[in-house]
Image 1 (tube, rainbow, N blue to C red):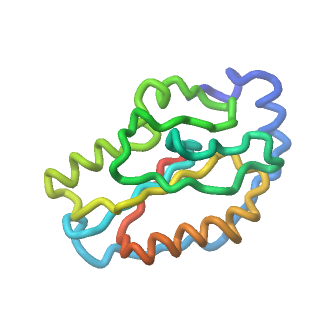
Image 2 (cartoon, one colour; image 1 turned 90 degrees about the horizontal axis):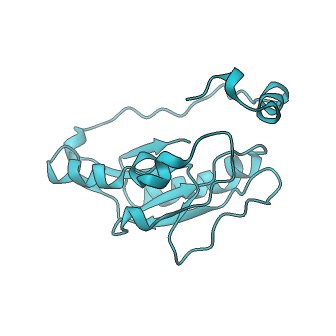
Length: 160
């Protein structure tokens, strides 16, 4: 990870003047049963989508707050990264999508019996949200309802 001083001037200025938001409440739900019997879903902010899906809109003011459903059967390496931020080096995720969406690793955990089962679908958001209000009020609760309807016990988040 680059230090602040290694970032170009534009990114340093953005970070210096960005209005970070503070959220005093963080939802927390203690795990009620062993992980080996839990249904698990992955959520990423890497801006991933399948070839059949529309990419995230990188011209959306404040950030594209939509999401994409990623089927559990997908070949992870076929996912496309449509993340708009230039603030991080995407070369690792380009080389191996499991760095930003470790579905293959979780398939191994499922086969080893370390987790109960993977959900039939996972979710991808666009990171770099500079105006997260619609994400917080609309699409994140929508995805939470999908996860609840799927009886997901654990969500593994890979923020980028």
